[in-house]
Every structure is written in C-alpha cells, then in structure tokens.
Image (cartoon, helix red, strand yellow):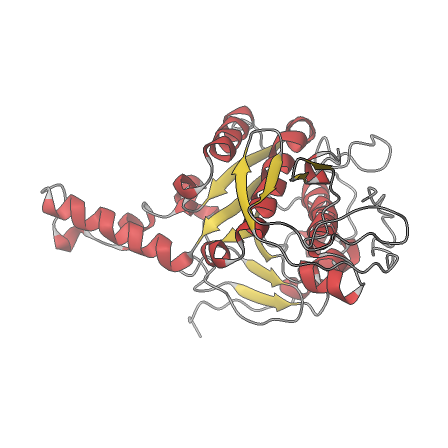
Length: 342
C-alpha cells in the first residue's frame, strides 16, 4: 500500500500521490502486542469500501485483511528503516565533513533542534489519501531530517511524536499512532545503531502500553553509548505536565526535609524534567521548527524554550525535505541571540 520513498538529495520533496477515497463508520476497541497493532470491531462495520484497485480498507485507511471481524493494520507489515540503509546514498554511519554550509556558517548552526511535525493528516486529506498514509509519509520526512543532522553536525534533535492531548483522539487512531511509533523503534534500531544515533524518550511514558515501554527502554539501552546524534522522541508529552511533576517532586523533597524552600532554584527544578537526561548545554533547544503554517508551541518543552528561536514553515510535515531543513537552519544562523543583554 505504501512504497518507500527514495529521497533525492537535490530535491527531496515527495511526489503527489494518486488520489484515493476512503470512508466508513466504525466503532473500535484496541489491543497492543509487541509485533503488531490489532484493531477489533466492537460493532459491525458499515459496508467497507473497496477502491478501484480492489484493496479493502477500514475507515482509517489502513489496508485490512478481514478474518472473523479482525482487521490487522498493514502499518506493521512494512519494513522501512528510519535511517535509510543504502550505503551509497543515505546511511549516515559517521558525521559527514561535506555539508552544504560554508565553514563560518557551520559554526553558527544550532546545537539542539526541536521539531513539531505538524500536518500529516492534512497532507493526506489534500492528496485524497487516508490519514494513516500521511503519518507513514511523515516517517520519510523524519528519515531525511535525521540523516541531515548526522551529516551536518547537529548533535541533538527532539521531535514531538505524540502529545498528552493526543490521548483525546479516537481510540482506534491512538492505537494506530502508537503502533507506528513502536514499529519504527523496533525496526529502525539496527540502522540507528550503525549511524551512531542515541535514542532518548521524553514524556509520561508510564501511560504507554507495556510493550511500547519495553521497546523504548531496550532501544535506549542499546544506543546509550552512541555519540553522532542524540534523537529525543517526545511521546505522551506535555510541557505543563512536566512542570507539574517537577514541582511535585520538589514539594516532596521539601516535606521530607531533604530541601528547604530557599534551596529551590532553576537548576534543581530542571532535575525533574525529561530534558535533564541531556547534558546541561543541550537541554534548551536553540531552534524550534514547526511545519504546516501553525504558529504556536502546543505545550511542547515550555520551560526549555524560554530563549529558543522559532521557525515556522508553511509546508506540511510530509513535504518537509532536505532543502526546507537547510533553509530553516540558515535562517537561524542570521539571528542575533541577545538573551536580554541589550
């Protein structure tokens, strides 16, 4: 249903896909397993649609095999690594000394880039595709950005994969999105290891399915010594929630007598945030990039972004390519970051 996009380094924009139409009403209950996401109907489907190529889909647009009322998403049956593995054109096994930036510009590149990867489902709607294919194509964009960070010497990349507010979405959509995250973590691990990418996960991870928690913990441990790029993935994340948890931890330490109220300062407060797992010099993003034309933080890293530079792109996330990322980084290099000094 979804073929891997082979990016061209000169022009990585995704081609406009063939338009398909999917619809249907449904009611779902979901279950998680380590290897795939199963979506089971709790009520009879209204007549499933069949597009002109004869592929049956459910209302989310996931290709489905109908067996005793169980529709298994094909999202976990693909095998597309997050870091492309072609040694000739894609795999960033070591930092590249060849970049599109002059040496003086390279010295001014951000050390920590944060990304709000917005517009996946709207891109799919614009192209007449089901939402899931928008998220699948969004994975392609993340591959490109990870590759660029490895090659251009950006040491930290934090991406907003699933917000705490996303739990309010339909149960079936939540199931598919978390399944996509789990599948990526499992299948990308060998390529990320080879590329020297260290994986960290931010957010209220205890709320996630146990199988996904295990995948995340295993990936973090396996990549803990890698140094080319630290890729932080925010899942079940809320900036306000992070601040509340940090405040509660401090209150408990004061109540137990391990701290006095006068001891509490910014650095102690930071210890309760997910970003504390990064070295202190990298905890605050230098640059935030948000796609799809939206211009807000959406509860992402609120404490850490006090002095972050913002860059808003009108492109939907699946359209965000190497050239768009380069433009965002170049924009950052022209900023005069004064931190209130003058």
